[in-house]
Length: 308
Image 1 (cartoon, rainbow, N blue to C red):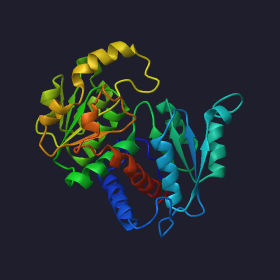
Image 2: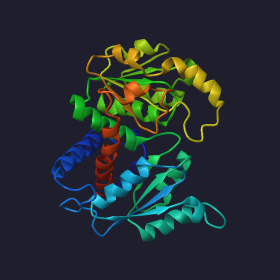
Image 3: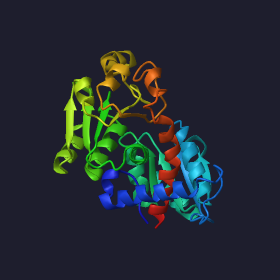
Image 4: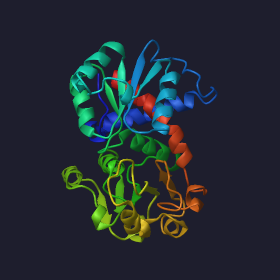
């Protein structure tokens, strides 16, 4: 039994095995319908509980479809309608109850501490569907998608543009260390990565460059990535933050400064006309919709890894 909470918790060998398993499973089901089960049905007779503290489209859909393709079933739980650290029931007690009912838990939470507490008290695996500190399933899907388009990611250059201090950039920095790719972050000084993740990067010899100049950040890049400027539950002055980040919009000019065959990624939902223009996200270099699809395949592989 293994939890999947942060990319940094796993070895490079384990993460590579997850990517390879996802590639193989996607290839083997090319002729199958979207909700048809994989032939081996490795999750048959098993179930996953999914808890959503935050709104979700891709995480909810992709995990539900992933479980179905693996031959199992899923139960979606709304914190507002269950005893989830409320009233007379602690998170510890909720975790103990879920241990008796299901085989694995996926938690999408505003508080990373909830994940860590669940991980302590559950006797079954827990997967991080998103927290305020990391988004490992999304970044694993991004690595998978990159390799489908550009080959093995090791030694390649990825550029992150915009807010450098959020859950996506944290997990991307961890991935750069584990998969050994070059990461260039273009962000205002005010939104530079947190010191804790920078210390981790230094300790693990991550090839990381941070610059306030977006054109410099995308030079010689194989992939440009960005995210919404204002995330869910982001308690900031939204107008002011968007004004500061405006020079970091991914547009045709910025894309032209990367390698000619560079691809564009976005985890969605997207702020069209803000962090990215329609011309880029709907253009030929965009692999955004394949990213969303690949969440299904990578999460199937993560589920199998957790239960192996």
